[in-house]
Amino acid sequence: MPPTATTPTTPRTGRRAHARTRVRRRARAKGGGGRPQGRGFLAKAAAVTAGLTAVGAVLGLVRDQILAGYFGAGAATDAFLVAWTVPEFASTLLIEDAMALILVPAFSRALARRGDGAFDGALDDPVRALVRGTLPRLTLTAVLAAAVLVVAAPLLVKALAPGLPDPALAVDCTRLTATCVLSFALVGYCSAALRAHGRFLPPAMIYAAYNVGIIGTILVLRDPWGVRSAAAGVAVGGVLMVLVQAPSLVRELRSGPVPPPLPRASAPRGGQDGRILVLGLIAPVVAFSLCRQSQTLIERFLASPLPAGAISHLNYAQKVAQLPMILSLMLCTVSFPVVARALAAGDEETARHRVERDLLLAAVVVLVGAATVIAAAPRIVELLFQRGEFGGSDTTATAAVMRVYALGLLGQTMVGALVRCYFSAARPLWYPAAAMGAGLVTTGVAGVPGAQHWGAVGIAAANALGITLTAVLLLRGAHRQSVPVRAGRLGAGLLRLAAAGAGATGAGWACSVAIGPAVPAVAVAALVAAGVFLLFLACAPEASGLPSLPRSAYRRTPHARRHRAEPSAAEAAPGKEPPPAGRVTPVGKASPVGGDVPLDHGHRR
Image 1 (tube, rainbow, N blue to C red):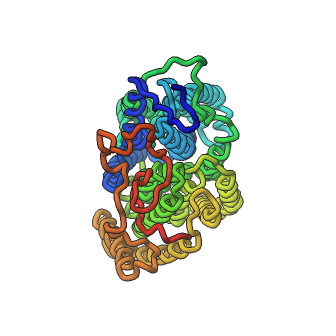
Image 2 (cartoon, helix red, strand yellow; image 1 turned 45 degrees about the vertical axis):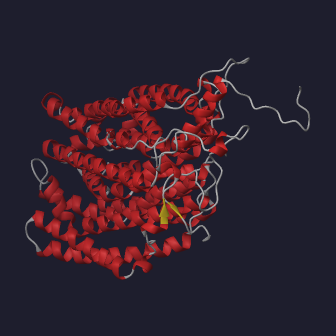
């Protein structure tokens, strides 16, 4: 009997229909194919990331110690550090900022659509469609860019450092480091995809592998190649970074839930995220990343006419001073996929709460680190670098620059964390690039007279001023963006934390001066600075603006527990389709977004 307006149609049954239903349930139980992302998972991910990042940072210090001990701080290291601009730029653009800010939200949206089960065949899987649409184009673009850098190396060196004493050496090193454009592009792609899937271990290992490659190459090739061995190490380290992640990504893509293919009358369509490389979408992110990294270009351009070693002093000081910033941003790196998924699910309150908490916690970490760096800078440089070709005058110059650099660490951290508020959703904006451009102009304008009057210290001061201006602009504009953070409340909390950091710096400085040997001086200064800062937090937690984190205030979301293997009675009812994975549910029901979700949903901005 044919169906009429009053007769319900019998639901479609069959082997393929049941297979599709099972796939959709499995995908929803996994959150679209990603790993569980409850409170315990994020804590473990943050701990793993922290540990491996610390390992990578220690190996980076060992790398810099080897460079300082073998080659000192002179014309040869200045030439290498000009070539080092290529991997610095490439890592910012392809690993840390642009690639992650573009692809983590893209993969999060693809995983959300996979969770909906709204696709019919293997070729329609949103995640694999995204990979097919982006990875080949990215690889081809990176190959062409690397080839251009190899050919144009003499022009690049002349533009970056016109007053360099040994430009030929810098050209050789630049051609060796140009290979990292391809390897870093693949590394950044794998990192973004794995983090969106909830896999944080392989991405956290990349800098440890990178530094191992550089250190090993220097030790093997130092005698025949000199400082060129460090440039060759960049190429070797880039390959190791890819090898650390590629197997995990391949396994993740192969294990994703894909239903059996169905016969189709027309060719399968590619995913919409295959157009992610369209210039209009990625241009704001790329512009921001380029402006941010261009601060280093300005520094080296301004330092190239200064006496030999100025670029090296800036580099060594920056590497050590930025360690607190790197550690402080680990939590933001782990939680960025959670924020992106929350926005994809329409849960704006969860995203805002997560970002605000991460900003304040990152500020605590970086301010404690900055207080230690400022208080014990000469002793830190003496402990890390003063040996071999690196003498006492180099220690004094590097320590002075390091103290000034540390004044901008809070701004560096806020820029790195706040930019996620702008780029977490599907519509990147130009405001972050404009704010970063304003900071870049400030750095250049202040750096010219600073370099003339105070040398490398003046250049570092201009850097701190420019990045702090960018952080203020990003904070003021954040309340209008995808994650509407409460800028006034955050700003007040950050000012109070900065005041506590100033007190911790004074206490640590006094201890560092009073103690003779370098090792106990640095240790005591760090402990005293951290103790004074934590004492402030214990005495006035409300003044800092840090949220209280009682365990009872958070609940685990469906991603943190494994769903039932069998459907419920409601799900098994004929014609009853499960609710969409992206729908925001009321309090007390299952939430579609992983991570810690506050129960006080009644509080609004």
